[in-house]
Length: 45
Image 1 (cartoon, helix red, strand yellow):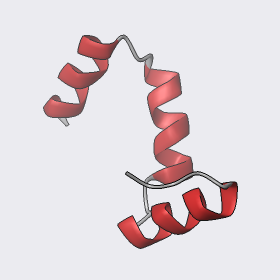
Image 2 (cartoon, rainbow, N blue to C red; image 1 turned 90 degrees about the vertical axis):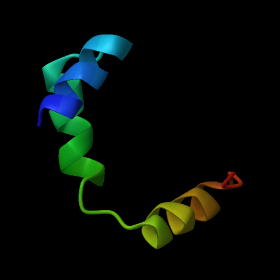
Image 3 (cartoon, rainbow, N blue to C red; image 1 turned 180 degrees about the horizontal axis):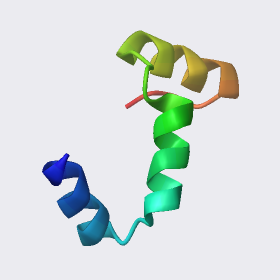
Image 4 (tube, one colour; image 1 turned 180 degrees about the vertical axis):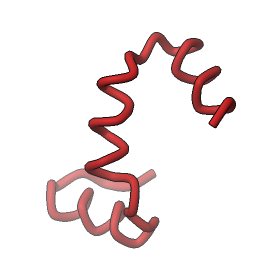
């Protein structure tokens, strides 16, 4: 919890933006993220 707070402050991410992205991508595995990038036409690095 506190590590996330420090990262949000470091990069200037608002709480609303953080929780919106967490709700959308929070349960995603690495495999899911790579598949999403492939479907969007981007190459994973």
